[in-house]
Image 1 (cartoon, rainbow, N blue to C red):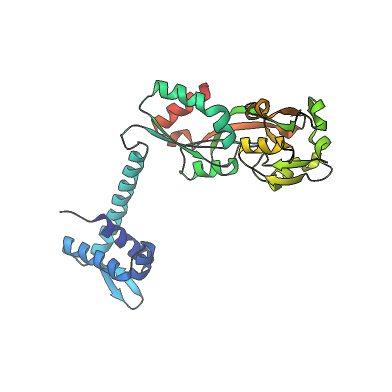
Image 2: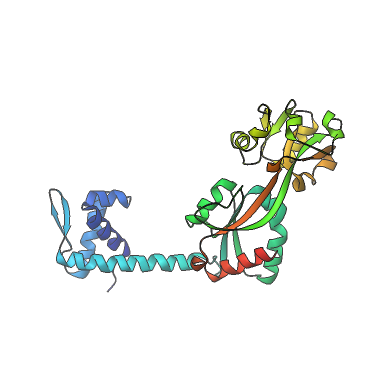
Length: 294
């Protein structure tokens, strides 16, 4: 006997919602299609499962018995799908990795290169995300692991320190500030800025840095792409804040200089985060240990 899984899903939804029309809406179907699924399930099993009345539907004793079995069956199918989801189309382990842009550029390529050298059949699905969103994606199971920066570990996930970086002030070589090797950002507040700031928005950045500033920065334009930002800085549109390691790839070619920022927030802590170790499949545990070893 073949029992239709969509029919079981419809039965469970109809019993829990006590309405075939609400169950149909929950499953994105019209009511007639939902009714047909229940009728086909009853035909397959040779028993009436639901009784209809003016207020909705109620399960028969046979329907109640099947409801409890159906819940178990659907849960088993969900677990089976989750087990297979950790593998790619070729059947090899797949890790879903959510990382912010700075970490991708600064740290990820060497670590992944070494990992693929050890595990040539492994697959990594890389998702570029903002730091503030990465712990949520991991907590909700949309990513297996994340790399984010924050002032403190995020709640809801297990985080371990990974790397630290530092942001600096990028200016043209002929800029008045170019004579300095390090400054506080307060010394630059009178100059216009080409934006995209630590914490990904100007408002969020100000909440981090405003205590050390006499007034907000003057932002002429915001550009997320690092090279494009450097080009605009070179053209005198404004000065900018960038991770020093990333800026080093562009400053010489564009006639720029990076000045160390002495502000405490200029140092950033990156974290690796996962769900609890007990929930991790072996391939994710192996990848986590590899990343920590780097």
